[in-house]
Length: 58
Image (cartoon, rainbow, N blue to C red; front, top):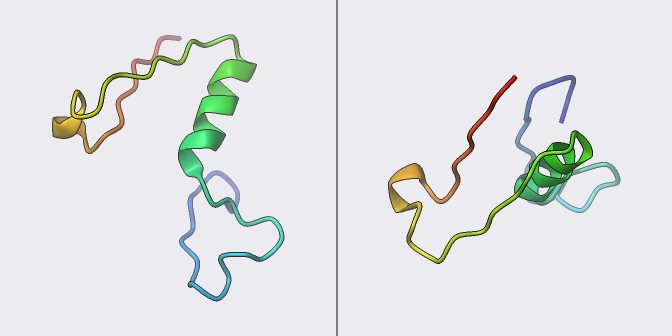
């Protein structure tokens, strides 16, 4: 992450300090820090969404 953007790194940089290796985990933690809920669905349920879906409310 640089600023508010996701920046992809090379294979060699993958294990460097400060590199996020699991963006889904980071998004789940941020959501939960704001009191959001996280729900895991059975495999294949989100196939038309590339495996990830979000409902946002403000």
